Amino acid sequence: MRDRRANSFSRSPHFHGLSDLPYQTATRAGEGGFAYGADGEWEYIAAHEFASGVTAVAQGLIATGIAPGNRVVLACGTRHEWALLAFAVWASGGVLVPVHPACSPARLQHILRDTSPSAAIVETRRHLRAVADIHGGLDALTRVWRLDGPRPDGCGPTRGSGLRAIVAAGAHVDPSAVLFRRQDVAREDVAAIIHPPTTQRGTHGAVFTHGNLLAAAEALVGRLRPLLDDAPEGPPTALLHVPLTGLFGQTVLIACLMARVRVGFPARTSASLAEIATFRPTFLFTRRRLLSEVYDLERATEVEKSKNPGWDNLRAFESAVDHAVDYGKAGRKGLVRRVSHAMHEWLYTRVRDRLGGRVRFIAGIEPLPQRLTHFFTGAGMPVVQGFGTLETCGVFTLDIGGRSGPGGVGFPLAGVQVRAAADGGIEVRGPQVFREYWNAPGRTRDAFRDGWLRTGATGSLDADGALILRGPRH
Image 1 (tube, rainbow, N blue to C red):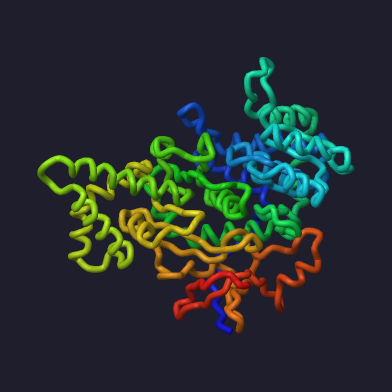
Image 2 (cartoon, one colour; image 1 turned 90 degrees about the vertical axis):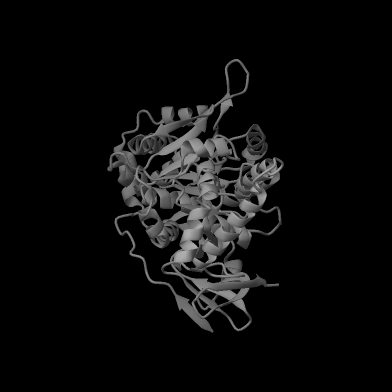
């Protein structure tokens, strides 16, 4: 077997648990915080305001009976209230059970029966009905809130009304109760139970500790530190155009708080280019569809211009793209290549401006074609792509700018060991590997071999230590 271990990134021992993060960020004026899109504008929340909000919501959860170790189901999309509620659950000592907003009612009911939560917070009327239909059979479930309740006039929902109800319930609770709960949390305590986004029967939730999620975020920050340090002047910002119900989205959110990066949430599930341009993110976490849209818009612009006599705009565009791809593959080596790159800067500047003009790197949650990866990298926005499984906090290798080559999915994160077994199966171990499957000891035993997690993927490690995938293991 071939074994590869990345250089270790120093752990932050002062983090007892995830709920420490909002408070350490709040101590540094002008750093971190959140923003969310609303009516074509951006609303900003300072780091200390977010920390105060976490305390207020945690007080409400404590007042309504949430005890340490109690599960809280959160069925909500990517919005700043998700972050507020998640950190409040952790601050109260609870265990988060996130559910995708598009989850079917039947799937939500399965998760409720499986985890026996003490509280459920849902975003949609459909999910509220699903909870109500089985509420009587769930002895532990004592509190159910709908995040956006109906308006008094019946014309649509009132944003955050359920959140305000939770806060109101805790008005009489002293904030010190939250502090004591936070101080009792250890990295070994359970933080979240994550169920895979599938309707397949027999699937089980994966159990993650505070230490698992902190280790994954610390490793991510460590690997991206050179890009973080090279960010443009001004407060660093990240636009999260990814689901927070998935482990990768949660790891990114935690990493942003850890690195004191302001996090922006788009007004809707799909961020518009206009929204991105006004937010002007330093780091963009997005889907492949948006990057393809940027490329297609630029090409369509030059196709339209080429209809006029004179300069062959489309040919110039294709030449600039080819050079960016070559530059993205080979880097800045050679004076001729750098001079040629400068000659095509007219296109690269336009592409960067479509995304706000400050993007230092782009991270995709879906595989991006090699040509697009190298194009955006060559245009000055390196594409970061990771590979992982649910059980590894969503990512255990990271590729920056396509450096791991065709079929490569990057190099192991700090503290992670990766090996290819004799049968070609990829196995992993490290601090971000989950603890167990919920209520499934037999499946947990089968998932490991001598302490190594069987990922279900097949592949190999090349001479430089990059993971090369061959496919799933059947």
